[in-house]
Length: 219
View 1: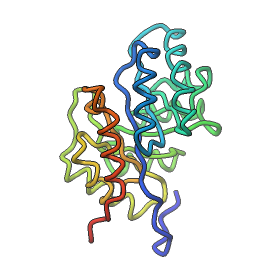
View 2: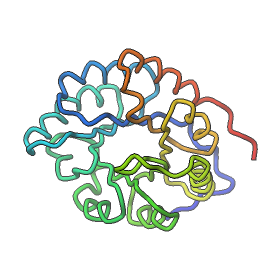
View 3: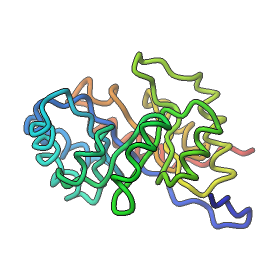
């Protein structure tokens, strides 16, 4: 796994990574998704799908693909790597080493394989060495729990200092975006909190985009 050259040029400006709520009605969500993408600098969208039969899941993803990809953003599916190609998506995000390893052959080399749910530094290095396209730090688990924010900042700072592979820092609130940028995140994920008040989504994304330009904290 390539390590970061100490004399390398600074990393590119961070970008946003949107995490959708659990989607049942993709057609109803499409307009809100379009408005969100128009409001700021979004590199990727992680599509979370509510349980349904396989055909329904594929159709939901297909309904949102042109909305996201038409804005030059990547559309990833949470977990279901087996649906990615059939839905025309760009890749999948896998939680945990086992899920990542199980999906890798399905996704590579044509599509993005992202990894989260990484409990330790060793886990992050393991998926990176296996071929992950990015690692995510700070996302909540299935019960909504997450590490202390200071620990998330420390993990991102370590990764950005040592490794070239991009990392995504998960912001649990708008106020965390700037701190994740300062820590060295290449992308900042905005999750469930973003969508709770649909009328404010565009404004929140615009505000998050402004924080992407904050100067890094001096070390």
